[in-house]
Length: 99
Image (cartoon, rainbow, N blue to C red; front, side, top):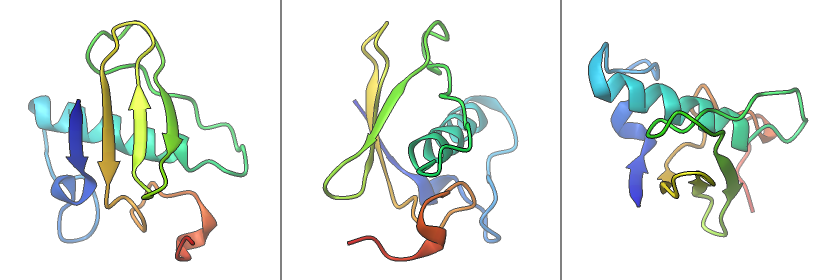
């Protein structure tokens, strides 16, 4: 299981910090996953392809502790992303605190 703190991928302006390589790939995956999981208005954000197998779209849900939980139905890779609230990719509730 991948345990990811979204804040570790951000620069001081809130944009993705890693410029290239595996860190950039994982950061882009997490950004897409946050947007997908928080698309409560159904604006059509597509599910990202699994960064590991690249053969299936991942599934996602918001856990009780507000972490984004994700899993790949094909390769069984899974993870959780914390501290995503208020990032540029958070599409839910306009930055309002969640209950």
